[in-house]
Image (tube, rainbow, N blue to C red):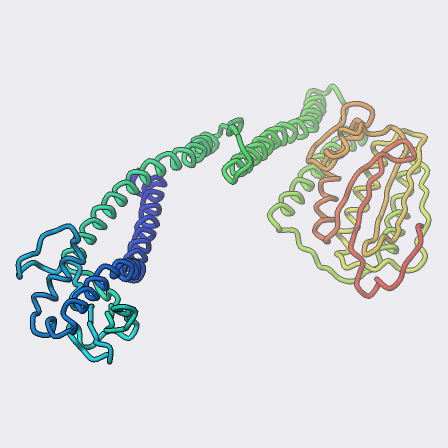
Length: 468
């Protein structure tokens, strides 16, 4: 794969190895100039004892340093014997392998120059030459400042061979490591990529096998959560379409049957027949309007004019307006008005719609004789509105799904009143648009309790009201 992870890993590792090798070789080169030369100088000082002894014997034999001043070949011979104790005397042209002669200086007892380097180094080592415990001269040994050409070239060639061998080995190891690491890294990514293609093709059941706890495993878990969410959304879409078709088919079937009965003369055209048709048309209109409201909410098209208002007053007005319908359904309404004001920032008409949906939900799904209780209380920075009713209740597994669109309970709380099944979903959209939320739980009265929380207006935070 051109420019893939394998190539990138190999390039990165090769660059790191080259950098490390360059630093190591540079440090080794610089260290050699100091450490190795210091080591040679120290070794030369320790080995200079034989030359000191030779010079002491020559002075004892000659009685002075005049022989060395006149005969430089004698000086070279002494140096050769110092470097090759077991060798024969060399020819005059024999090279000084360790560049010893330029680093040696022989001084007499007054420290006057006898032979050798007239300008020894400042850090040179001075060794006394004794004859019968009397200082007759000094041997001055200057330290190494550079290698001779032969030694330098030999060392450079050796280091070059070592560097090239190390570089070759590093490249091989980098290649093997990059391949292994790339296979380890790429394999999970390839699985995710293949699963992504399946997901894009519409197979929402695809999942990625996960092993380990690293970032790649986390990526796999995120992908599986995405696939699960998409699968759930797709199933919800299909269920929603099926429910919409069912909701539209029922009133349309009734309308068609009644119209056919009117056309065929089976049923007379009178006021009761027209009222029945009107009710079915109203059901259809309500369903279409609810769907429109949800569609506008989903795309942010619902307009909200948020202004400070008294939520307690709004609740009292809606409860009073809905009381006759609840009484007709055989339900007793229990509402205690909140003392004082409950300020919120909201849209009056949207909040009215929310309250109507909650009261209508209790009216439709509560058995008569029954009871509906409405309470408004302060809860920290929130106002909490609770609308609860009596039996029948809602199974616990359905509580979290009550706010799904068209979710129905076919058992005790069946929609025998012909509701669209969208009222609680619309209420949830309105509550969240006001910065609040809505939740359902089992009621103490034996039915369902729906709690709406709305943020209190800032100017109202200082006041606190007891439960109503």
